[in-house]
Amino acid sequence: MDLTERIRRRQHLGEDSSIIREYEAISPVAHVEEPTDRGPILERLLDYLDPVFDGRQPTDAYVWGPTGTGKSAVVTALFAQLSRLLARSAPVIHTSTRAQTTNAPEFVYVDARQATSPFGLYHAVLDGVLDESVPRQGVKTEKLRSRLVEHLRPVDRRLVVAVDHVNEPGGLDLVTLTSVFSIVEDSLACTAVGRTPPDELDGLPSERIEVPAYERHALVDLLTARAADGLAEQAVDHERLCRLADWAEGNAHDALAALFGAADLADAAGYDRIRERDLTEGMNAVPRPSASLGRVHTLPENRQLVLRRLVDLDEAATESVDAAAAAIADTRGVDLSAGTVKRFLYELAEAGVVQRVTVSDTESAGRPPSRLEPRFPTLVFRRLYDLERG
Image (cartoon, rainbow, N blue to C red; front, side, top):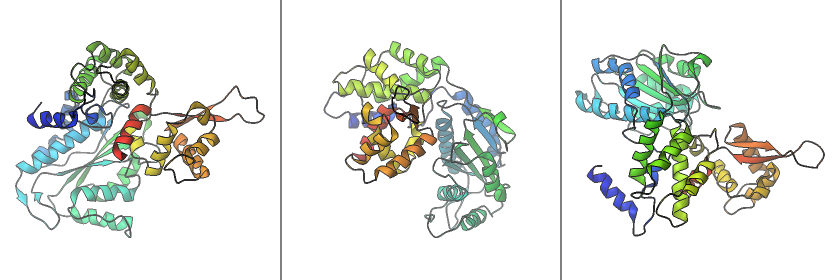
């Protein structure tokens, strides 16, 4: 741990004896600068990107693996480091937009959960390479495409773009990426990142890199490192971290979500260690399979507000969609009609963020009602939402 990290930990410690020193360190949506036990994957990615060290452009690639394998963490960390190190080591020429190197490419990371259309994709890429702000209003997709072409017009200027979370519902797929970037294919390499196995996709690039689930020992190492950074000393013992790794079955997202929830429960109860009951409740608050919290956090603000109110409702209020919508619309801070809330809930169910479960023991005639169940880690979502919004 370097000096900056030591100072930050004391800043977040405060005067109380909270078990949680740094929420971000144990958050499943936070990416660390040095991903744990992902050296072989980093080497494979560096092998793929090796042409950039000789001033050449790499091919397109597809990085894939199941949820919770650290794909986003590895790609964001690698692109950030390459952008810093290569730009620092190469000769620089100055342009009207940004200081450029004569042979090092630019590296840009795009989240397809936020850039869900060709317009959004062009905008995100331009926002990553231009110093001036890129307008969202009053400009057409064709204009942004032309600006990207103009930016890459110099012969020696190249761009490597990582597009994360492709092939998710309502987002961008590989075929769309190929079409969007075809106009600059001689100057731009696309590294697509997703969960779908290659044999289920069309439009695949020739380079494919698999990111497998964490091995048990690697997941224990990851949890140990995150706990050391985020929790008080001896807040959780090794045996409980091993149990958590066994339960998570290689999924770091779910393991961290359960650890976060367990720590939050222990802290709320006034304990300085995570008890067995805290760990059990923390795991129970993570549905399996679980919708990614990263996906939940990219939802529009009003949808997140609806979810925040939903997780506070008792069982009686969620026994039907109508009942839940009425209860949410009636809560503090919700300026939405019950009809609008109901529409949002149906949209969220369609996206897999919540689940409609048919109530089978009803005595009423007609189609049985559906109660709502969150499909995301509720304890973590509640705490992060409240921390971010006071």
